[in-house]
Length: 356
Ligand code: GCU
Image: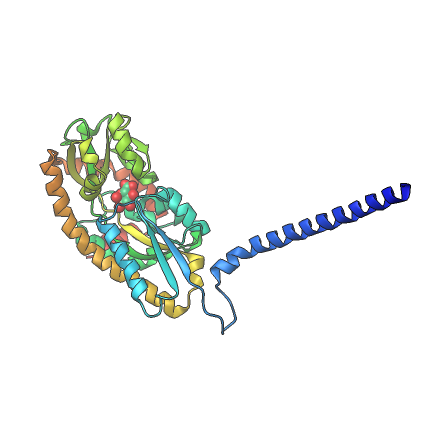
């Protein structure tokens, strides 16, 4: 009896030990598999020449809605990549619009650590990812849109695109985002004094905050997709943006005064994560950059068409539009920003102004 009992216990122990060992091995196998997933998914950097190169998914984040000129430009980019003989089988762009992957700041952070592979954002929140690109956000820097595009399409533009490398980002092509002016719920802004005391939403940008302060209003940093609700509830009085965004985000419904002072001409930028970029073959990099540049040319055309349409639409909706009367007072008021940022941006301001 005792013998039978001992045998039973021993058998049970052996079974349990076996089970534990199997479970442990299962867990080990599981954790090895988990740790291999990134490599299996990326499938890149393989030295096996015979293996089919894996497809790299390029999740691309943007805040705009379908049909907006920037979104149309990015759809065009997607199509160019899909149809390219070299890139079509290798890269799989996946455009996510409407800020579903977060506001621009969050998208840029995800892009930096590789959570997403591409993004197209305004240059304003990018300033903290580069020591120089923020120069483009300084108010009243460009004489007109021609001046801006001469700078962006030239040597300075290329220099600024490369300036993001230290943050793990690579700039591919500039997109048009027009010029930004103030709009609010209270009154037309004709003179500097009309801005006084207004709570104005700004992008996540130090320069934009300081500019609004220098003009006598109070800046409130908010993500793009939070502006409508905050205008609606009255927790902010106004914001500043181009007419296309004012229209597409329907801000005109809750802030009926749009006053042109064209304080900044901040472009958008199509970006890629630097590690993803480096894993591409040189000929793939050339093809991808070319698709980005072609899409930016198309986007500028979509932009020109949409600006007029947006202006007509907001006018018809009853928006009061005016030109600021004393623009030189506005320009004068922001001069302290040039003193402060002049040092940070070195001779860039002078070089930009010298571009004819
Ligand atoms: C523009 C720009 C966007 C940006 C937005 C903003 O619409 O194109 O990229 O997010 O301004 O004010 O946040």
